Length: 442
Image (tube, rainbow, N blue to C red; front, top):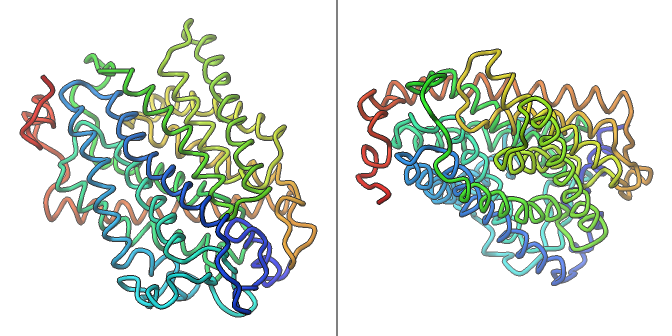
């Protein structure tokens, strides 16, 4: 398949197969725009309050407020970074590696605020039916949740100042380049033909690997392996997980960037995969530990949602059930056996769930992709699962894994040299709520 054909094919997750009617003066599609406004709100809800509550419910009482503050403040910080330069680096024209600064401070958006726009140029351009402002905000929510997910691996022991500095650097130097590679027509992974409908590589592998590196660099929590580190309030975790499940419909179905059949199928398979993953995780836990836990149920749902993310716009319901059930088993393994075998302390299983299941979902997309769902005018037959596609998926996964691991390690070392990464032993024992924020739960 030629690069031009692949570019046309991979426009599907971004443009609902639209032809460039915008160039002939067509107006914004109000239905598509309404759906994308709704999807944007749903994805933002995934971080605040969804992820914030999910993570806060799983830490000890002395760190609940600090964990909530991390998701909330990361949301604010990344929002500003995205407006200033993040969006331009991710979706500016640039080259195969990174966007340019042509949209610094969202320059030019004010000129076409009520018009459709195209992403890229020439034969590889992806035509939109929504205003660029809506696309910017939708993509901002993805940029927000990625570093917020990383905090799960670093819980209970990282300085708040270090987290904010790392988030700033990660957003500009890791997230934006990877988003450009995968989702911009000029990006090299886009041209390669790797399928990532809604962020299996860009969000989940990216966050999971960065979290793993962070956990290794920070070291284990004091008392890890022998102190009681049971979750403070699983009610928070269940509420947060439920918000993540509902918000994920915007995450995946919204990535069709149109209100149509692809969005409908993405929503259906997202729900099916999450449900199957709950059963998969509980089955494994029941067999190995003797009892199915509430924490296992909610963790299984997230595992299934992660795994179906890269596949959501490319697979049918049957394969979605397989992907989901496999994710439940894999997530349980990643959150239990894997980290114990390798000896790292991934506090809230950011890598065990997002990294492991993100990789699983990306690879299974190459097996289960259903051609007609990925069809475009440039490639009427679309891409079906095959050995060639599976190998392309492996290539993309390995590339993002290695880049994120190396870049995150370097950034963490820079942050450590500037402000230090970890709180003192005394501060860790007292808890981050008091030592980092001067507050505590009554």
